[in-house]
Length: 311
Ligand code: FAQ
Image (tube, rainbow, N blue to C red; front, side):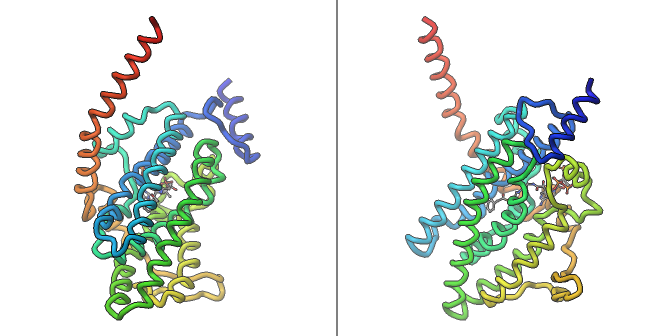
């Protein structure tokens, strides 16, 4: 019966074993995974745009090669994640459609503009840093194809984080103007980076169930705290500050206290009213439409090959 299947499913999950595509799973589990993994895939693909914006203006060949490699990695992450989503019985074409029609979300962080080259460094340091913090526990996610995809994604994200930090170290040992550029960029990205972890736990409708299914391993607030604690010492090494007067060490908790992100701004961005939301989707739609001939050619070739094999 369904009850037996459900009990067996929960036992597998609680024994920290993996659920695989052909295993029985509750509908809600499948829906949640499709939602989260598709949103994650869309984020990687849309996330190519903010930094891609600086590819033609990288300050040296070395910086350009690094940035190009990073942006291409994001494309790869999107592809593995779309493949992981397809194992749940949805089609990638449908997911792309959902993204460009605004039926599925992508991370709030990619709705902010990249205004200076320091943003490339700060995105690597803070945005990839936050992504790693969130994604390392997802390597142990109960759904096999998602957890396995995350292993490679995390290795690449950690290169991204380091290239960002190294870029910022270089700028911070440069001129006053370069140091100011870095600080200005940190001021713009700090709060949006904290919002990447999602709404506070008491306003996170999906967390409890996703934790019980071991899709998520930690709550949004736990991961946000971990990120703050790991970032403060790094900021000290760099010589930058975070724009939060409430940020201070709490010896009793053994953690940093910090201020409240602007959750109204977060809600606006998630609703599609971010500074670059319209542009991001318009670019994605144009790329998809410009690629129509490739899809048509591949489909025609596959049909012809199949009919030749059939004769
Ligand atoms: N932005 O109940 P919860 C990257 C939505 S890293 C937009 O807490 P959940 C790497 C949420 O979907 C970025 N929407 O939801 C990179 C839900 O709405 P729904 C991608 C958000 O799922 C770096 C509602 O709010 N990483 O791309 C956000 O349990 C540099 C209620 O929230 C991932 O996607 C947000 N920040 O927890 C690439 C990681 N937060 O769907 C290029 C995987 C929440 O019910 C350059 N995802 N919402 O309509 C997760 O870990 C989770 O989905 C959370 C949200 C933690 C993001």
